[in-house]
Image (cartoon, rainbow, N blue to C red; front, side, top):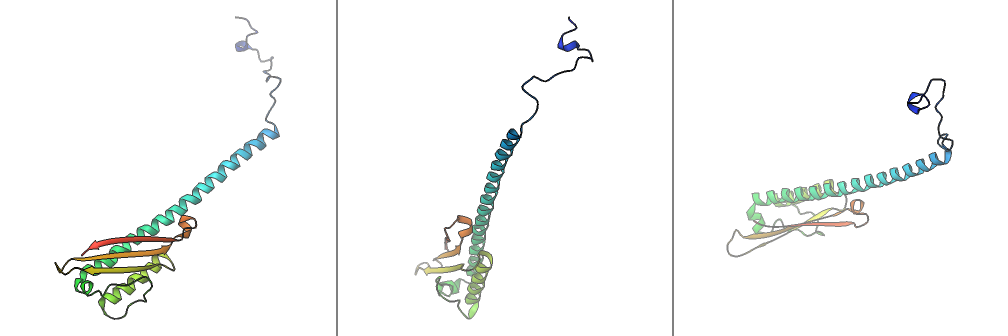
Length: 163
């Protein structure tokens, strides 16, 4: 092997970079920063969208739990269900007096607390003559989900059960 080979250089011969490459230019650094900035803005938008969808999902989960909470009160007092004591429309004021009225008023207060201002609920039960235990109840919850859906304000969750 020759002593002029790149593997056997003496310490007196400095290693030189190719003549066209002397370092990173300011323009290359600027382009890299712009590309990185665009990527970070995309990640921020993705994070915002994920948070919005998470909020909407949490509200839907709360609506399901609140539906089952009033259903348990209705199961506890089937006589009031048969006499339509739990029936209420979205536009009706909170009822007064009795167990069923207290449960409905408390349920509506929870709707506003968990789902925000403007949330309300309706209950419509229809009892068939035969058999007596056969009541079909429809529970509907409405709330404003404009933050989660990007402008589509009203969400409706409906559950139909046979008591």
